[in-house]
Length: 603
Image 1 (cartoon, one colour):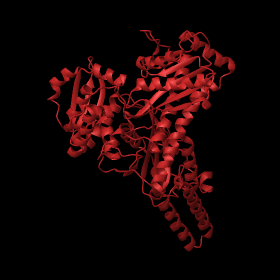
Image 2: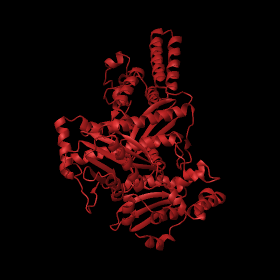
Image 3: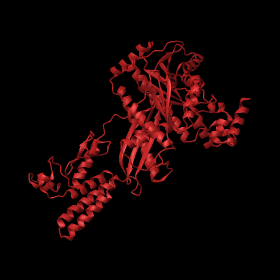
Image 4: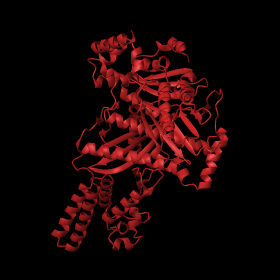
């Protein structure tokens, strides 16, 4: 659908909250989105200039648009999530979580058994969980067996069978692990009370269980049955010790859900901590594939909703690292600055960083774990695939990074013999380029890097990878030619989305087999330069090193500048906006300040 074709139907789309659906020529659902204002949101796809290949591809495929009006943003949010899960459109965020989580089932039967299962059956049984670790479930079941007397046999304990005396108590009864319902020694009500204790234990709510046992201990003591009283006292001590080990920040906290996110290129990682009564009862990290340049603020709400549904969370407060648009009214969103909640958030951040670092190490170990001969084979295949004159034992890769179209930095990683050589990694603060200009930035950093290599008489790499398309490759080659290095090193461009490899001057790209060892190595190098650049960028942002051009405008502070960048993505886009568009975001007086600044600048 072209912008002109969209304008012909734009008037039919209302300025109301709801969800929109994009279909292709074959009537296949491509994308589902939510919006506060349906017309404004859908119009943005046909009026903005997108740098992401996949967004261009989506817009080119759109043939038909459907929308559904909802009563509120919250309804739109829930409906969007439901439709994505139902239809799994190609261009929507994909939450990669193929684990089959374990549950503890309370079987629907007389005197129900409890046991571990991975399969939920619609048989009326009660399923508690899911849990993220089988080992944790087995530990909980052992703990429950030690403290709550429940049967483990598979006998059909109907009242008629019990009255007919069909069964005899087993060793578990004599060990005190079962109260003998098979011979009528335990009532169904008493057994149901024991199951309620199990539910409380699994929710991390041990206090009611402890109070129940204390009452039972006093009852035994008043009946002068001191042996049983001492046995119950040991159970209480066991429960209190278990509770003490579980408490992380404090029992005064209510039920909370804690989330943190780390975005690396087109992949985001979200960590979830479920907190109940001051104890962490669940922890899980998921990987999410983004499709259309979604930022962290757009990815996190959807991940939160799916994780809460997966783990059946009923918490009314969520802890997050930054403000998000989470439209559910019954949920309080907190961005803590200190105290116990901030400690929990820091712990979540620590977990998501550990998770991604472990994934990175595993990728690297795919080659690091190989023998010298195997490493040589991979590098030899890369030499053949790219038709290089020699084996690329020394490879360097460059990538530019910016935040919402501002604050450019660059990074370079070095691989020797197919594995990272971290001592040779380099960061670059862009010095000569004003604003966002990926081509000029790439030209600058390549020139700076190899000017120094020549000056210090260091060895040149056999292969230089430029993470970008033909434009950035051409910019890098200008520096290579200026330094008279053409012919001495091979420089290729790697298209960000299609994993195509370009040689300078060639019209056609090279597409390596998706499962080839050489492409896997190139991917690992690209992922490593992304990680290294993003880490540097995040550090500079947190240290307040960057100063936005907008903050140089008299009367425009940091919060207003960030508000503009969040809405319009880049300083360049802000310059193109009308006074009316700016006024909607920051008000008339500040909009005039911004307009005046850029008017004088462009004179």
